[in-house]
Image (cartoon, rainbow, N blue to C red; front, side, top):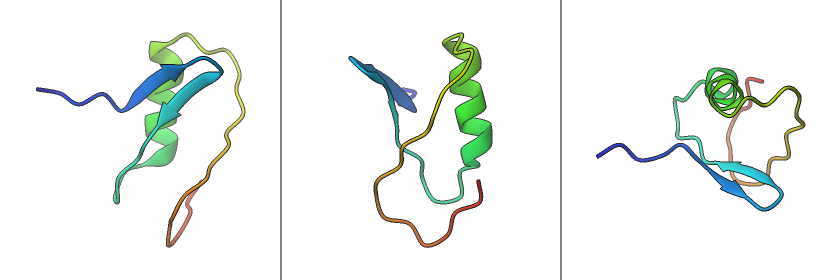
Length: 52
């Protein structure tokens, strides 16, 4: 069973990334799958490093 990487919410999408995930690649996949022409990113959570 494949666990979805994101869910649609009333105001956009929620994506949870795991350690080692390529954030840019995962966001690009979401944008292509959902035909998102433009977006902004809001991030809240725990992280040790950011590579965006």
